[in-house]
Amino acid sequence: MSQHFKETPQNAITESGIARVIPCKELDVGDPIKWLSLGLQDFLRTPLISIFYGLIFAAIPWFISYLVALTGWHLVILPSIVCFMLIGPFLAAGLYDVSWELEKGHKPSLRHSVRAIRRNAVNEWGFGILLMVLMIFWLRVASLIHALYPQHQIESLESLLPFLGLGTVVGAVFCVGMFFVTAFTQPILMERKVDLATAVMTSVNAVWVNKVPMFTWAGIIFSMVAIGFVTGFIGFIVLMPILGFASWHGYIDAIETKRERAYV
Image (cartoon, rainbow, N blue to C red; front, side, top):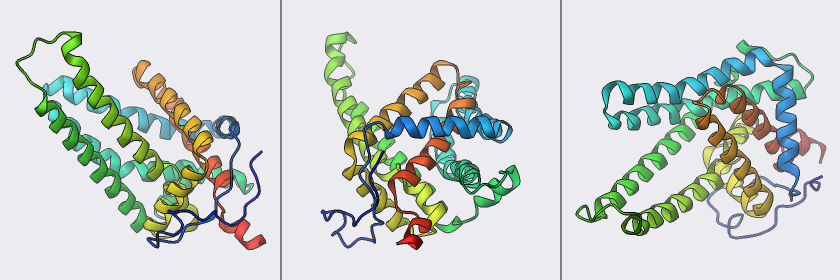
């Protein structure tokens, strides 16, 4: 089990002065498995609400793929992703509310979870816009890498290796940065109602302090998303709600909440 909360270790993140950093605790390597187990339990306790959100998460990539197949216009992916980045945090907030209600001994309802989406609306929208900007930046970088690739070469595996290697390295760096920013930002915004900068810096610090368990968690997320794509997005109906619930339990386990602060 992870340790009790204590003062956040001083590091470059906590001393940056950019924003307040909420205390976190050191996690065990096996904690992500515990979060996943708790997320599965929440799914089984609220199957109808879970499947409702799961269907939405599954419908979004299916609709993007359908538009591309229908129009043959791959540029439709960009505006579709932008829309998803804007509404994604609100959908996740609904799942977090379900787990939060179960934790408090209440009976979750779809209406309550939808209304919870407005709990910290301004900063939720700010987070969605931040994700959108980061995604557009990544698409621009990817386009630049593609433009620099010499088109006249014969497309053999040997000639493609430098291009694939560069794209993989740049993509990996971007994904790691995104994970630091997004790991706990959304549940922090919902439960604490703090500003976006505080939520982002707290998330970055929590991942930095717990690099091994958090990147174990990142591997679990990647694997479940991959399963969702392999199953033609059908797997998302079950996997995305479980990930949402598990993410909430990860937040409760890793970051000091208002309830724990009141007991200090």
